[in-house]
Length: 147
Image (cartoon, rainbow, N blue to C red; front, side):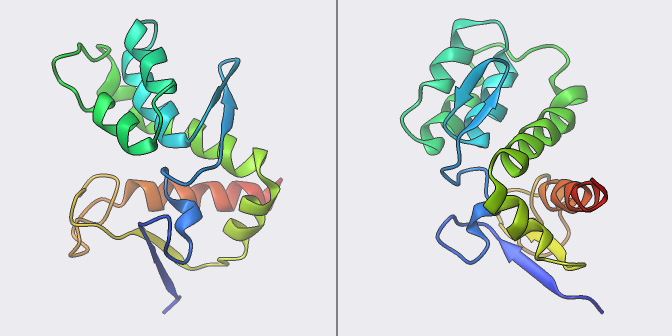
């Protein structure tokens, strides 16, 4: 049985794997303070709300703005959200060499975003969630190994 690495809070070990970790990324010709800012803003691409999220003071505020359902989500969001997250993670882990090394240092460990707050991106707290963030990180780790 290979090791399991749980992550969630930016202050925990492997907190760098959190989208709230303070590692700016460059995408779409702009600098985004965190991968969370980028991800949330992409829900409203081409609207003033996109830029408001990019400029949010913290990733927590960016997340709140991104979850505001009084604003209209882009029509294709459900079909593109995984690709958007994949793109954000690739930017984060290739633009910050120390993060790339940290990700590669996890070897074959299963990466799990451990949180009761999310059963899509995380494990739902009880392991029944989809753990999509962990899965995308493992997929990226594999791709980086081959590059």
